[in-house]
Length: 39
Picture 1 (tube, helix red, strand yellow):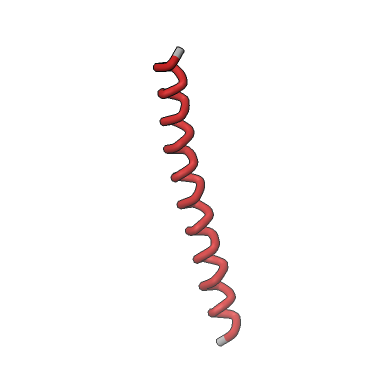
Picture 2 (cartoon, one colour; picture 1 turned 120 degrees about the horizontal axis):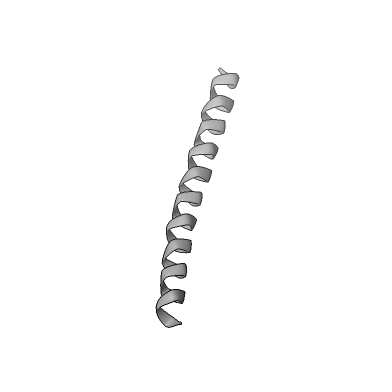
């Protein structure tokens, strides 16, 4: 049971990091667009 939980938590961690990275990419894109609109 412990090994299964460890595998799941590891998958979740990788998914979480990927999710955060996608959010940051999206925020940067929207910031760049807002900056371009201002000019």
